[in-house]
Image (cartoon, rainbow, N blue to C red):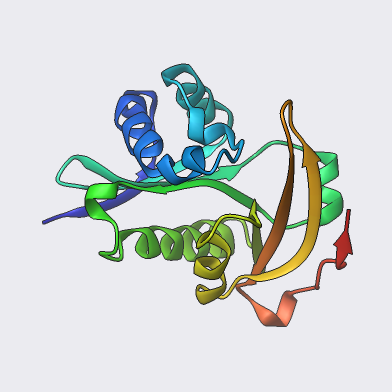
Length: 178
């Protein structure tokens, strides 16, 4: 049973859409307005082209995915200078088997630490989601910033979390609330 970690291509879009939509069921049920929760094939294709979308596949089947955001977002850079990951999803058929952890470990070590030479990585999640922040905390992420964002229908409190990959070069982002 061969596992492969790689950058996604446009040809992977349909499988990535299925994994993402199925994995984000809880997000939709909680009415958390994350774009990945309402992704379309076009949105997935744009994500592949505009960012670095990585996947873990096993025997040709996409099991998990995570995106390293390449957008030059000045507001996010003000929060943290480190690479930002988003759109983490594991196929519900393969949850609780360690595939998501394997993919995150690979991206953190091989892409963020080695390829990008970044000493840390950060992400954001909704504070009201019942298990995402605790899951990331178990992986070594620490909350350092909260922000309330206004969507078309509601306000959503977001927590930003950082994980140190190389403590000798890491500088703590400033703790803020906004």
